[in-house]
Image (cartoon, rainbow, N blue to C red; front, side, top):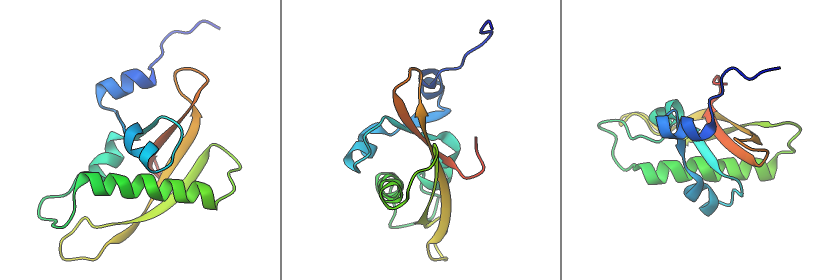
Length: 122
């Protein structure tokens, strides 16, 4: 079958559809190149206006660390893993649990990569 169109992971990162978080992921103990969708970044890494005591670096660390913890804790029986963490997106409400999804599989070549996204994203 002839390939008509391909959209690579590299292109998705260049376009801002994915955000490369490999450095933070490696600090948290994840071995593979890691990216997060722009939607998940805007929901749970970017700090909403008016929310104090939060920064993007800390929120990103929490996501990477909780994914690493979930991988260590769960038996992976496929490429997908759901994991939960607490996120403070409103000043007057306490942190709320959110579920994210990570897919582990090949990237632009057969080498494994991790992509973190909202639970309903593909």
